Length: 353
Image 1 (cartoon, one colour):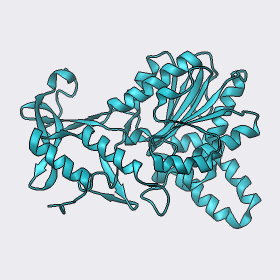
Image 2 (cartoon, rainbow, N blue to C red; image 1 turned 90 degrees about the vertical axis):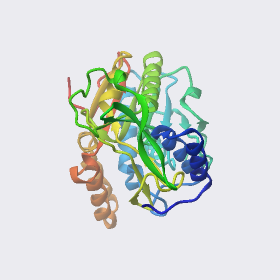
Image 3 (cartoon, helix red, strand yellow; image 1 turned 90 degrees about the horizontal axis):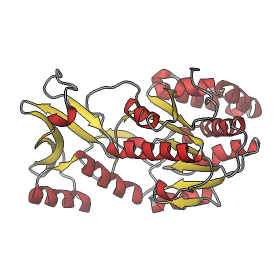
Image 4 (cartoon, rainbow, N blue to C red; image 1 turned 60 degrees about the vertical axis):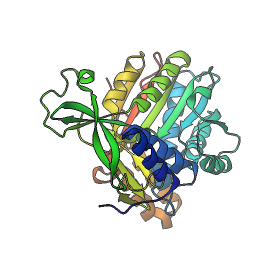
């Protein structure tokens, strides 16, 4: 039995479950993360986790150069703007914009961030940025050059579990005072059709309608306005089953049900499903691993230049490079998906057609 946790959100969930029955994983995850991000800066060694832009400036610089290269080869269209979903501390935007500026791309900056705590940090790092609660407020004219790093993984997921009675939505109920996974009462088999018909009992399937909606909107904008998007996150490039719901606090894995609103809840991103959604809009879609993309973009050349410029930091640069690229570190687990407007050139860093 896990330790019973307090907190107003946990108490509210318990009252809701006792009154109305189990709640969906999506609701538990969505409300937990909304409270979590609204109340703190979770990044860095003093926070709960570290993302790639915080590991090395090379990550953001190469992402910015990727955008600038596409924009330049597309004919340097006027009115292009930089957008970022979930900008964290603003580190990715700062490094990307610096690299973009070096090659002549000076774009207005639009950050999509719902957390007041993180907005305050971002405003100091990226002066002059425009802030939006969601992507619907982004400019409706001009090519959109968008980055999103570790944004999709924090969006709510739904889980289906195969039971003896058929497919049911995996819900969260109570075992005493503890939150526990339970199978819902509604039969979800019709939604799957013949998919996964032969899977064993207990098999779990995850979907993220929220991530699908975000990617669909991004791709629709790129179709209408031109531009490109680079989405980087941990996940898989081929369909898979099983629960990937996890929680991190103070750089350690913790029970995802134990402390709602006090830990970062995430799940692996199904890039195959999202690529299908983006591709159906007419956009070009490319995918690879983070390690392969960074290597193709020239991270080794950039690392060597940084080491020459600051020999005392050469070892730190090498460690950061390895952490971002090596398969046993972030290189294989993290994937990169590019969405590019029709008529724009093929993006750098991906295998040619």
